[in-house]
Length: 110
Image (cartoon, rainbow, N blue to C red; front, side, top):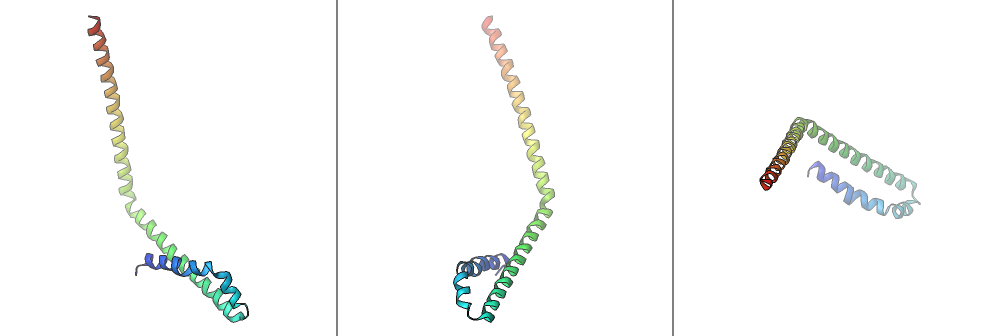
């Protein structure tokens, strides 16, 4: 099981049902203070484990972004260059259309 799968399992199949039924569980344990404290401590440990796994997940994402940042910047620059060329082409096409329009008017007058 990967860390991401474990994190998903802990969130959805362990913590979510506990949180959904926490009031019932606490009420059932009210009579036994030791069990109630153990339950609360276990919840705290579960939350700490999930937080640690989430932190590691974010660190992995940050590390991957750092590794790919140069390539991402190059890709963004290439897209910007392409857009610039497209704008230049559009300006050229507009100028060509004006010239053709002027030529058509001259021909029509002749």
